[in-house]
Length: 94
Image 1 (tube, rainbow, N blue to C red):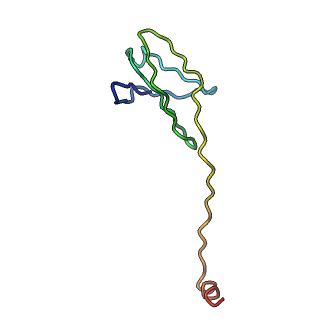
Image 2 (tube, rainbow, N blue to C red):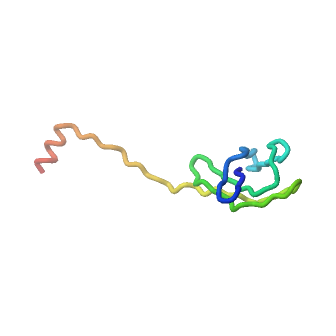
């Protein structure tokens, strides 16, 4: 999670999802003050997602709902083919 002041945002807390994909930022444990925050989510194989800024008042509980990550496009990697000198010579003759 990032705190945003004016045009700058900076990291203030990190949370990991549980087995159900849920996460919580507790203002007391993270020493979070009222202000503007945004979520930044990322995982291997997924595109990073950044939420719009969320204004949070003192002692306010905020539920942002679903915060989905989009899978990266599938990429196919072709193996590098190394030709032996004899095959290369044959290919050059043809």
